[in-house]
Length: 351
Image 1: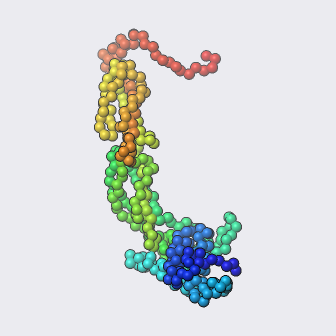
Image 2 (image 1 turned 90 degrees about the vertical axis):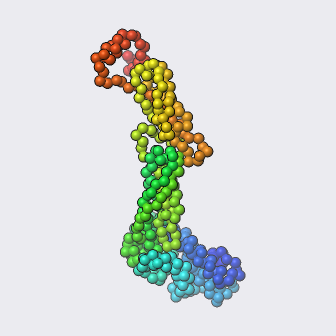
Image 3 (image 1 turned 120 degrees about the vertical axis):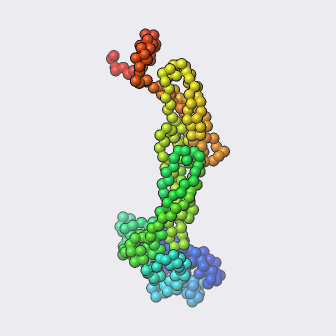
């Protein structure tokens, strides 16, 4: 067989002690564990190399032969896996103990788990598009990081707030990695469920200036598998506002009504903002749709030293309704005065 650099694979010097070799194997085995790297052929091959390297370098006789340039394929038969199995058990014992302390009785042995991994790293690669027997399951392993939508009102986004929310999490089965299957069979530890679900209430701080789609990271509040716990990512869902429309850059837009007389004669009107009401002057003969900019009255930024967005106010001239006889008479009187009206309407070709 091809002679590999087992010292390099484990990342140790040639004069490494047995304790250093064992420590290096434990560290690397956790990193390239197939459950941590699902459907990753490169990681499976790396884990296989690590197992072979440890099998040789942890045995004084085999190590001596290896140092003299000799490697025997028979070293890697099933009968020689006991030593690696022992190290693997000690490496993952801590995670299993935590499961049992939490009241979750594991319904499988370390032998089950070890054999499952040895089986996975020895699956031969198939041509693309052809499934390797036992190499995949019907479900993908569950991610430890969790995303959850967080509805936030525009007022809350402007000022920042604290909210109490319910977080839904999963404790992923350490045997099947959340797939519910082991070697295409129903996982005996979780009965095919992939783990257990739970929920808890937590208080989160929503900073000022968040936008739709912004993410807030809450550390160690995601799913759990063994010793590892993922993070919770809250995705801001900005609730549609009844009056303001929000633009991506933090500017706000709104529309305010004015009367005919205010539009014709001019007026000073009050406009609501997220902070307080402000006054703007409507010039005489103001046209419907005219827009006024109020600087700094839009949505705040998440960083306090950055300028807030602006507020754009569009004028809507309202047609009066339910007029009295006197009011109609006055409008009739006004209609006798000639006024130029722009009628830039579409004209069909030839007309």
